[in-house]
Length: 352
Image 1 (spheres, rainbow, N blue to C red):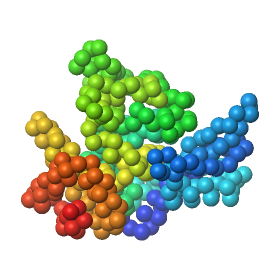
Image 2: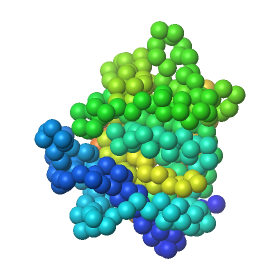
Image 3: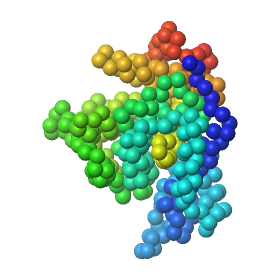
Image 4: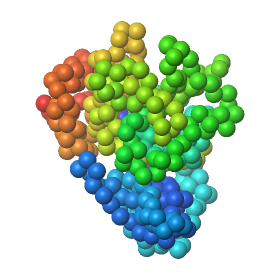
């Protein structure tokens, strides 16, 4: 079954929903504050903030997001209708229902409940990025396509965050107590005991159920021990290649019983990252490696048609990381072609 493009009316509704979610998030942060938008350059990239003075006349900043079309559109809308913007939960719910009927991907209701609580806590505003299969699901909707096999009902939730994210986010000093958020859900979340009892847990699970939440962070050097994430009051498992995946996140709408705003990886980097990690899975995880290749194949097919320049840019960046990166990705491409997992002929021309 080939990848199917969603209809123009459905993708237009999605764009409207994403705008509403972005405006709602900004409204929650700055609804009653007097101030204005400002930007700064960090690591050669521009980021937007809302700047205001607190009751002590000190200057404070609230993070809006990286400089892109969505951020600039949000700023224009807010400044044009600052005094009339109101959170419209009903309209968001209606749009989400219409998109579900329009065959957009959704996530399991229990998974959505957990991610909604984390979103409401400010987790994604503080730099956390949804990765794994749920990110793949969200990217399908963002790109306006219906994946062949998204495995959207998986119960594994993978969240990643760079341990240095606080350097870029002024709000990060107001940390999210992730264990407390999970505890308040009263679903029975418990830390998964680590192999080394001296290490902190990096995963949470509900006893007797398959639902599991894993925290990940980029590996630095040869470190394998859990890394403290002070902004989340938790620890994360360091993972190779993850820094590449987290550098240019995008905002996306995740659909369930309603809709929430999440951070997801750049689609092109997500695809190339899947190629690379598929070659580094140990034999015991061959099923995950197969899923990596299947997801990469679908993304590459779409991106080669609709975002070729972004795919090329992501590939050039990966190649700069070293020959091992490009060799692993090209080996995975060959496997995809042998297994006929998708039409990646155009992607193959780009990834040279």
